[in-house]
Length: 566
Image 1 (cartoon, helix red, strand yellow):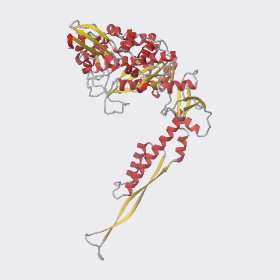
Image 2 (cartoon, rainbow, N blue to C red):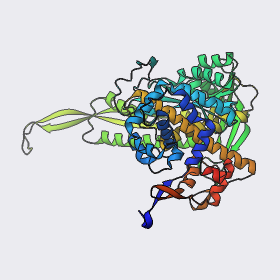
Image 3 (cartoon, helix red, strand yellow):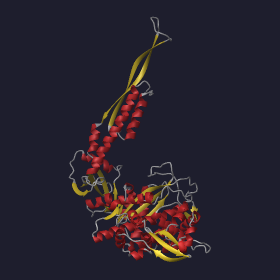
Image 4 (cartoon, rainbow, N blue to C red):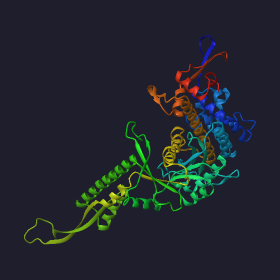
């Protein structure tokens, strides 16, 4: 306590008002109150309040559930929608029970009720939607997560599957996200069992999106897992439009590459994009060609050639050959040594096949294994050899290894470097528009997955209850939505006002495409100070905003006075 009975209390303001601004427009707190079961009258902290704090934490700074109370203690309680005495009530048990209540209320119904009005409120275009999936890696056995019914609803199956985090030793769930091309705004989420095959999920997702959009009149974009005949036929026959990449396993791929060996294609340049790695590097030039080999189902197939992909493919082949060459030389040296430890020619061939398969060079390298028998003489008895020493003749088997490049195969594949095919049933979009939809917009889903895992720290998951995991993942979706909308609002306002860049990076370096993470970081130092005397607030000290902070508030349509109290 300061002299005179005064006490100064400081709380972080940060970017929390910006998060609240978006959540208010989403009517998130109202939706929680409407969807959650009525709270126990004896509850000191309603589940709605606990879930609201948890959602705001996921946006601002992911901490474990047991640390949420400590985290909340540093923020302005009113901005967390808490009374000052409720902050101390935040603990892991209460948060876990709140997640249980959210599961009982059906998180999917809550997200649907959130997304439908969001589209209208923020004027999000749904003309083009992009879908992709990723693994959510879990730690633990989850023996009870077998899909059993809980409160009449089936739960998820936590099990092993194709882990995209390269952790096949851990169990997982499958996170399937759909975003709009307009700002990469999340519009649909499905969390599936860990062993779910991606290709089986698209028909259900597309059907749900039709209900969300109000019809099939949108372009559905996804990777090659969409390209199954049954799924594409279903979308086409129901009036939908799709865009995907043709898998290499389809016969049309091999037929086109064979056609290239004897024909000179009439490529047409359709786009020039900045170098994918270097700001001042040469542009990536894209050329297109309608496929001379028709798709087996009659859909439109367009081949593209990328100048940078051409270079990358050629370099990748050189690296593979170099790696295989080095390992084959090491094997040959072993065969020439005294302890080769290969008893048969077949064993040597198996070792070579393993090297080539591991390096990926089997198609480009030919090899020969030869057996050479050498006579070796040893004396029958010990001691220094003399005139009467008897010698025993034994044949010693050695193996010789030679290899060479398969030049015809290398030349064949070199003619197909830099190519990729896109398959669609849309006859109106130009080749340039199809390219933009897949190469420019589709990676935005991966960026949302990166945000989920690395900023919101959704994985690895340590919760024991599958019910609580499902509820928590629904809140992660809400946090992703807040990130996307805040970012989109700032960028759209910049475009309207002709602002090309903002000094958001360290040392006031310019940023052309502000992310929510950078925007929140600009507001992170803000604090509010309250001066108390005898337990009563006698004065409030709000922070002074910088010019950049005021500019960002202007882009978001927030007055500074409103910002302080959102």
